Image 1: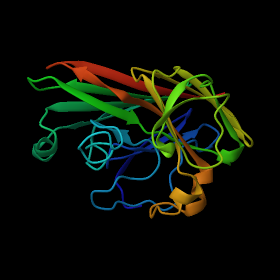
Image 2: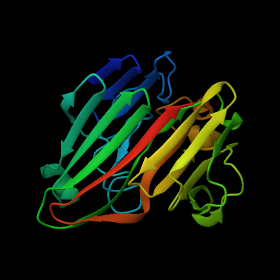
Image 3: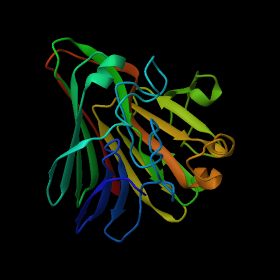
Length: 267
């Protein structure tokens, strides 16, 4: 993997973060268990994002706009601002190239904290220009699971969602969420606490703030077979549970600041 990375190790585990995209690639807890999915072979392709870990989507979620899918910051280098025993902080700012696509000044700061409470990922968005802007985005977290078809994501019963795997139809979640094929659901105004559990894994408590929506995605066998950056059968070993601002853009005035976060705790 010829990707410059930063590593944080402490008594609570280890994090590995790529300079490219500022992307968290690995979170191992103290016992050495990996909780994020990335393909075994990972490499940079020009203008392509890295598969797995926690991609940062900004200022556009998915294809909901005219920008490249999931925005501008997944395929650009981030800079290290600071590192302590328990935190790693990275940042990216606008430049001439981003402004040709999206004419706004910004700075994003990602703060990763690994401590006794688990992993906290915080994204701060600063409007450093003199004009307001609106954005969508997400922490596109790929969770590693032994077998996604044997997993249950609890906490979304009764929630309305848009089903991107079925023509973006509006539906209501009935019971806990289970996966047996492609899943691509945007839950607007979602609960801020979910629990993922399944055979052969410890349960994971997932909370979020700032982000109003939750996105649950798994490509399933047919879509995964079209990917060139992961083995076709790896869809069984991942589930994306994303903290997102997808359904409604966030408006930020000139000089304004916003923060969204996701917190993952092994139960």
